[in-house]
Length: 162
Image 1 (tube, one colour):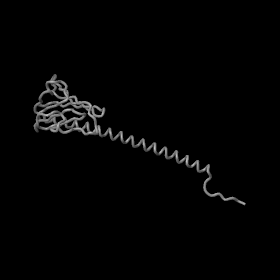
Image 2 (spheres, one colour):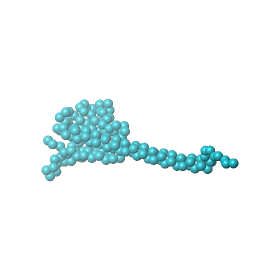
Image 3 (spheres, rainbow, N blue to C red):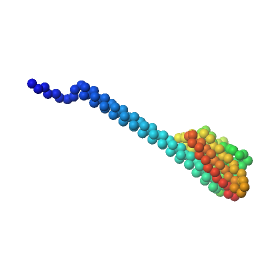
Image 4 (cartoon, helix red, strand yellow):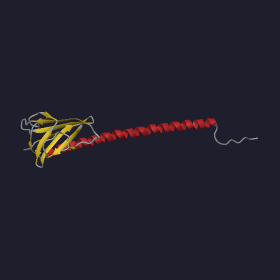
């Protein structure tokens, strides 16, 4: 009499479960790496966007300059910029891990309600260094801006035209 077998034996079932476990484990590991890589890339893009935006605002303000007030000219290095442009007074400063801007107005401390944040909460600004560059050997005077956002340094130099 022939015996008919139906289904899987216990050994076959254990082998299939082990193979399925390996496949699922590999899939989960690959998915985790993709997601964490995407998160890192997104964070880097945010930092680049914030840095470019800050330098763009600085270039905008410096492109419209008519006069520079202290401490920018008197002090070689500062964290604050207070300038008069064709569209009015513009102030840039660093407070509470953010860069702040105020157009027009006087008084108040950096970061108070008269200022607006130039950077978002998504990034941490470690430093803002504004350096006055005096006119030397026929080169015009200028201001170099340097800021560190999420560990990445952004720099630009803007020469003053009078």
